[in-house]
Structure formats: C-alpha cells, structure tokens
Image 1 (tube, helix red, strand yellow):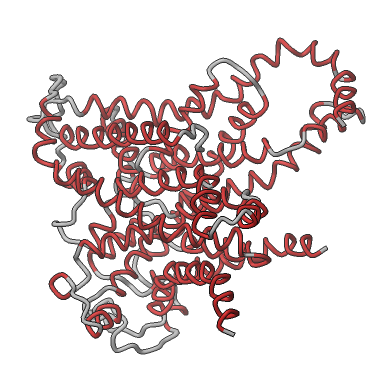
Image 2 (cartoon, chains in turn cyan, green; image 1 turned 135 degrees about the horizontal axis):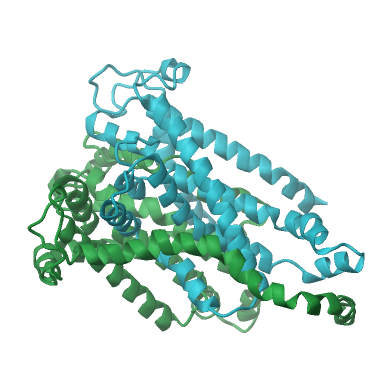
Length: 268
Length: 301
C-alpha cells in the first residue's frame, strides 16, 4: 500500500508542480474577470473588497470615455502592422530558407538583433530618429515601429515551417508538369500557410498589446494599452476589465476550436 | 526514395540551368523590402541613438542639440545611475532563475507527462498573452494589496514581510516580472523537451541511474538549447522592463528603464537618456554573445 502510494507520488509530482505553476499564470486573469463584474462607486479603491456583483459593465463595454476609440485604434494599427510584417517577413524567409547567397550571415544577424534588444531601447532609438529627422509622431510612426519589431518573429516562424517542408512534394508537382507559378500557388503556398497564419496571429497580438515601444512613438495618439496606462495613473474604469476578459475568452475559444481538427487526426 | 529524388532533379535540370541568371538575383529581391525596413527603422535608429548620446547636454528639445562628441555623458550617466543599472541586471537575473525553476517542471510535465492533454496544457501556458499585460499587472496590484488575501494569509502564517506589506516592495516587483515573462521561458524549454526521446530516460533507468542522475545527466543536458533560449528570452525583456517597477514598486525599486523612460518622455533630457539606453543595449548584447558562446549553442533562434 505504502509502496503504491510512493509510486503514485513519484509518477505525478512533476505534473502537480506544473499544474501549480499554471495556476499561478491564471490567478491574475481570474482577478481581471472578477473585477469586470464588480459593482463599484466612482471613487471606490481598485480592489476586491466589499464585492458586489453587476452585469452593468458587460452591457456597456465601451462606456468609459475614450476607451472605444483607443480599442479600435489598436485593432487598426495591429491589422496594418500584421499585414506589413507578414508580407515583408514571408518574402525574407523564402530567401533565407530556399536560396544560398552572399550576405546570408549578416541578414540573419539583422533579423536576430531586434529580438535580442529590449523594447525600451528600440522605442527610444526610433524616437531619437523621428525627432532628429523632424517626423511628426502619430498613427504612422506607431505602425512603422510595430512592423519593425513583428518582422523578426514572422521570419523565424515562417522559416521554421519552410525548413520542415518535404522538397519532394514540389519536385513531384514539377514532374506532373506544373510550372513554377502553379507549383508555388498550389503546393508550396498551401503547405506554408499554417506558418504564415501562426506568424500573423503572433504579430497581431504583439502589436495589439505593445506598450513600451508605442509609448515612445505615439505622440498624442492613444492606443488601448496607452489608455490602460493612463487609467492606471488616474483611476481604472471597470470597462477595461470587461475588454480584458472578453479578449481572453474569445482568443481562448478561437485557439481551442483551431485545435479540434488536430485532435481528430490524432485519434484516427 | 533518394533515387526518385535524383530523377526529379534530373527531369527539371535543363530549365533550372536556363533560369540561373534570374535566380541569382531572386534572394536579394525577396530580402530587399524587409531588409530595408530593418535597416531604416532598427539599425539607423540605433546609430541615431548613439549620436544623440553624444550631443551637448546643455541643449534642449525646443532649441535643438549641438553635436559636441560629449563622451562625458556616459561617465555622468554611469556615476548617477549605476545603482539603477545594477538593480535592472540583478532583478532580471533573479527573475530568470525563478522562471527557470518554475518553468522547467511545467515544461517537463507537459512534454513528457502531458499525453493527450499536451496541446491543451500548452494553450494554457500562452493563455495569459490573450489579454493585455498591463491589465494583468494591474490585477497583481489587487492581489498583493495590503488588504488582499495574500498578505492576510502570510500574516496569519507569521511570515515576516518587509514593512508588513507586499505591494510597493522588491518581492512584488520580482513576482510581477516572473509572472510576465514565465511563458517566454516555458515555450522554448517545452520545444526542446518535446524532442527528447523518453526511451533515453528509460535506458538510463535500466542502467541503474537514479532519478536524480537521470535528470542531471540525460534530460538536462539534452534540453540545454531550450534552457539557453528560455533564459535569453526572459532576461532581455526583464532587464529593460519598467512597467512592473512602476506599478508594483516604488522609486526604491526603479530600474534603468524607469530612468530612460522618464528622461525621454517627461524630463526631455535626450543626451543623457540616449547614453543610458545605448549602454543598456551594449551591455545586453555583450552578455548575450558571451553567454551564447559559453553555452556552445550558436543556433539559438
């Protein structure tokens, strides 16, 4: 009996620690969700004390002044930055995965460096450039900055997918008299697509959630993270927690639904 | 199979030869837009940052700065803000170690014991990213507040707290940093543990290796690429962070990021801020390259 207990503990303690760590990751999300249902007066402290439940904030998620504008602005910036970074990054990853050329090591370093540089350095150096060249800070300087830091992540993600492709699939297409364009559009591109989609999702969330780089280059434009930052100094409207919780639930469901075909395949 | 590959290559041999002159330009053409973007908006700004750090500090944004090759800006910044620098590197190092200690069991459990829950558990690791990190850090403010259940539990257990509180202390800042960057540690660790063949661990067991030896002599060495990538991905952003120190700490916890941010955006002292920012970049790049060399894994990312 004791032996079996020891056996059970030996088999499961790693998983138990792992689940505790996972719990640690989820506690703040639970707090955000709880705060989104909290019925608070105007000047109530930001805490879970004297908790009263209400649906009111969920009925009016853009009810706080400026929050809706900031939210849609961040969506627009993230969409543009994702589009730019995915196009530029996919082209670069094809060059790196498919061709040998001079300057390859230098290109790899140029792509690696933004990932090894703290955001505050990238943000402040872009600010130094924009100020020195007299560029007006605003929407487009934020988009430029976001494309820059998303680009490296796109290259890494798509390149990994390209490296895992079986070159014989394309050879087979060519053997079946597909020309280069047909091979690319009907064989290579569909096979690389999961990598491109993953890169796009990553870019979108990096851009949408970015505060540090944006804070340096936004001028008077207020993105959603900038709005949250401003609110944290003045007083946090409960709608912030509504949007935070909704974003979490929607993304979680989307990713979970995306996993269903995978699970089926594994079963079969 | 390889014979088939040869046939394929042979069949397309002639057209490939014809297209060679065009193909040689193709990689450069593909690289041009993205490469230019990175040069213009990453490399050139870094040079501009260095130039800004050498401006005459007596200038101002309104009147403009004069380039006087003021290398003394670096000495001035170093003498005044050395504590902030050391604090940033110290906090980042401590955060990295704690993330490794927490992240390794989680990554190990998912990769080797996850079974059919593997994907779901992995989604749970990245789930915090689904909502804004500022909102999550504000939630920590609620959790660690003086009247929160963490402080009251610790008080009930008679755990000594600095000043009897958690919020606005160093442990709070470290907890926030660990929380924010833990997934960056877990994901690369998982990626390399996933590739680990569990039969190697069984073989070690069959050869009378005790569990500890199985871990230190088989699993850990084989997951080193993940450890290196994870520590870098945690250390670099943690060293440059200022959000956690600002929201969960006081000015006694301020890191170099707080100083850079306030000098650029509030005080408007560009030369000194640029000197600090450039020093941070240089320090981190040197650390990264030394570390990657030492760990012997050049293919980190």
